[in-house]
Length: 82
Image (cartoon, rainbow, N blue to C red; front, side, top):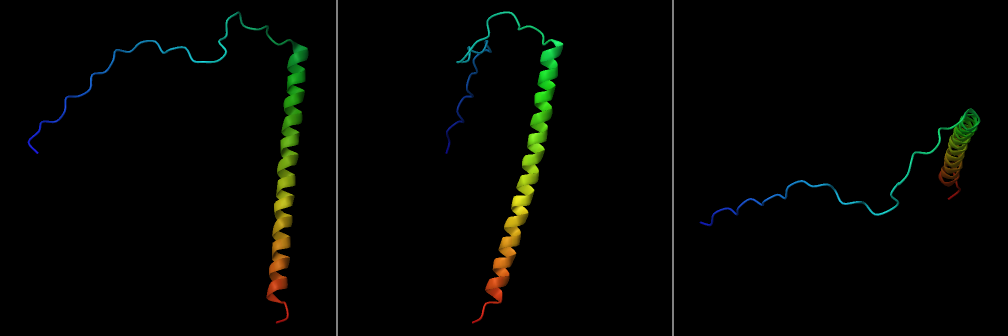
C-alpha cells in the first residue's frame, strides 16, 4: 500500500511511418479522360443507378409478398378447425 506509483512511460520521438505493404505507385499520373471516356463512364453510372433502383423495387415487392404469405398463414392457423 505504501508503494509509489510507477514512473510514466517515455514516448519515442515521432518519425515517418514505415511503408505499408502492397502496391506502391511509382510513376506519373495517368492520362486525363477524354470526352468519349467521360461519356462512357457517365452512361455506366446511369445504368448502375437504374439497376440499383430496380433492385430496391424488387426487394420491396419481395418483402411485401413475404408479409402477405405470413398473414395468410397466420389467418389459416387461427381459423383452422380444432
